[in-house]
Length: 303
View 1 (cartoon, rainbow, N blue to C red):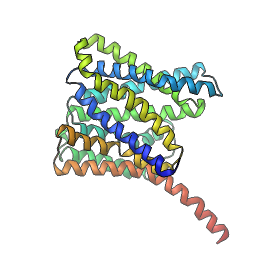
View 2: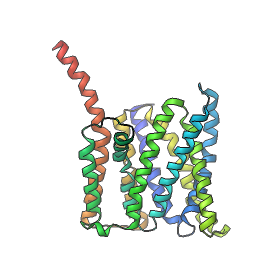
View 3: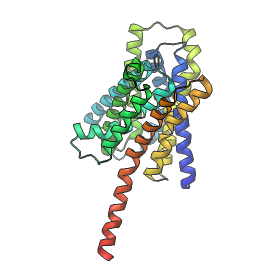
View 4: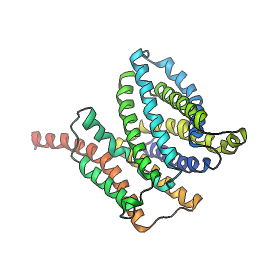
């Protein structure tokens, strides 16, 4: 596969994820947020299982009890992110949700600083400041204008960052990303269905009405897009992968404007732009500086 083809796969994955925000929002016209989460992740678990079985045949290391506990912990973090995002969509727009959720890119290195005691790259701090400024502009310059859904989505981004951090360290030990995906999807489904059964009414007609959104997010966002990401990242550079995957927020906002008629004031668009720049800066600059350092060392030796 050529790099261009790989980047196109990543772009398609980002477009699928962007469409997922619209599906998540429209589904709640028929069904409660926790029933939606539970059913979408049940479908996602089933969608990933064939890939898990294929992965298991080639696995060099068996899953230990410690790894299983980590998988469950990651699943709980995923449930926290999915729940706060889905409930947040009841009182925020798809555009806001897609951009604020993308701030997990900024939160991941911050979590590594405070919990893993890893020294941060200098760009993390200006990136975090840009992200906060973007949220401020998104509120129109009045933090009181931020809705409960906006604030829940910020919490969602923190949960996403925790999930990504834990998943990254765990997969590096096990080499079983698909097994991890299946377990975390299943844990999220069980937790959401338990909450839904306790607090939300449901009917077969409601599930049927939301079935297109459930299947889209369950099969395409969680199954197909994940596979496209895994394949695409093998044949392109990390920096290019970051750019194409970060476009998820742009697709979410564009589809929200096209399909749902969402709009916002100029300051809101400026805030979205600033948050998107913060995502790219945090993703790209550390890799670019690492690449330049060996070149400088080589030049100092032979120049």
